Every structure is written in C-alpha cells, then in structure tokens.
Image 1: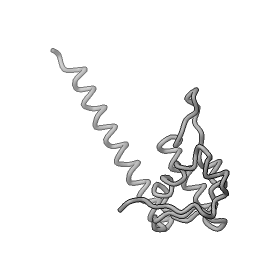
Image 2: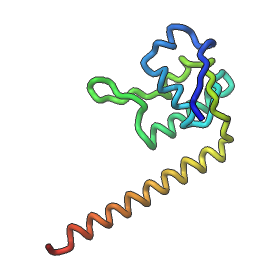
Image 3: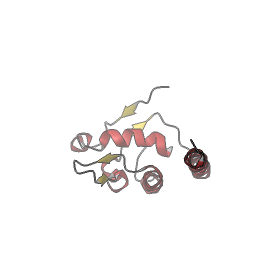
Length: 120
C-alpha cells in the first residue's frame, strides 16, 4: 500500500519546512497517522525513541543531526493513511527490531573475529 498524506491543516509555511517530508515518513516509523494536539506528546516520544535507535531523519551540511522530534509540533494537522499502533505493540516491535539488529551485529562480529584469527 502506498503512503498517502493530507497536509491541508498544516500551515502553508510549515509545508515548505525541510523536515516536512521526514514528518510524513516518520508517521510510518512511529505508528501514528494523524498528528494533532492529542497525539503530539506520544508522537514526540516515539520519534525520540526511533531517532535514538536509528539516528536523525536528516543532517545539516556539516553532518550535524537535525532531530525531527524537536520540530514535530510544526506539523500538527498532518494526516497519513498509517493506522494507529497501540503504544505497547509499537514498543514491542521496536524492541524486537533492536534485539534482532543487535544479534545480527554480534553474529557479524563473531564471523569477523573468526576470519581475523584463522591463519592464512
């Protein structure tokens, strides 16, 4: 299914903000498809968790992170076709992804160590 969005309720100036496109994609990453005053606090927390695990959505020309969570309030009114993911289910999913990535990292490290220790 394609990601669709509606920004009619987002102020015009904010639709041109450099992080606007990231806010759209972020809705899938955090499992919140409608950003309003009620969902904003949870969206900020989930975005902080996501960016903490994966890094910022964007970086400036010097390579410094531009964190979306700090700017998310600009995009209140944004709607996407992403279904709301309950908090516990979303946290479990993020935990499972982080655990799998950690296990894969350990597996790769063990392979690299074996290659380094194996005489040629």
